[in-house]
Amino acid sequence: MAFSIRLTDEERLLAESYAKLHSLSLGEVFKRALFEKIQEEYDITVAEDAYAEYINSGKKSRPIDDLWKELDL
Image 1 (cartoon, rainbow, N blue to C red):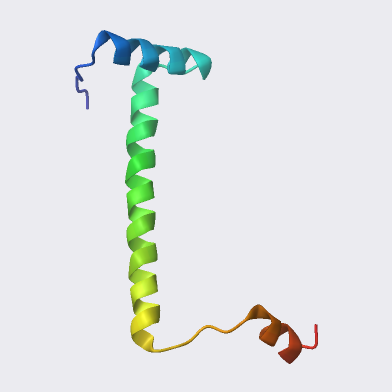
Image 2 (cartoon, rainbow, N blue to C red):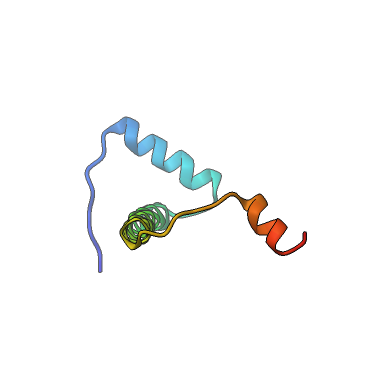
């Protein structure tokens, strides 16, 4: 699949500079940026869901020192 993107001259120069710095094509730079953003948002959503599940479970956290004492560490 191919697509086009409109950039200002300043944006284009920045993207080209980044691509050259990392020895990548512009296409690869944008592809990586897109999938990195998707992964970040997915990770945030999973973390928020896990935290909400923890809060809703009624469980309480406790200091790590308590665990160490329990395990004789």
